[in-house]
Image (cartoon, rainbow, N blue to C red; front, top):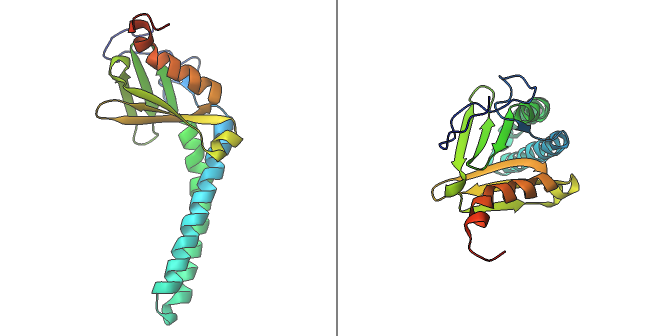
Length: 179
């Protein structure tokens, strides 16, 4: 049964998914996994490369080789853990629902975060597209309230536009005569 409480609490349909993995009806699209994998790989490699460069510059000569070996092990561990495991967990344990009264976003596997933003309190909804997101046909949605900024995504660009329209529909319906 779908909840209708204006404060955002209540049960929302899981649309055939397991209750543990998804609290809300909508999930990230499958192509988002490719984006998350590419992004994680680039982040690990760039961070590791910068750390190795700093090690070569700051670590004394006798300690450079052992330090670089440890950093190489950490980079490989990051590629083994972060890229395949964390990206998949992010995909599997992120769900959302955009309704007329609230936007609900649930994330997390071990530490679950359930965010409810009342549509009446949303000041702005931005759609963010970088070159990598555009390459995969994706966008991120950023909800801004007076004291909170909450990102969602990546989702397909057309879905991001629909989420934006739905989240701002409270203002569009209330605005006098500008249609």
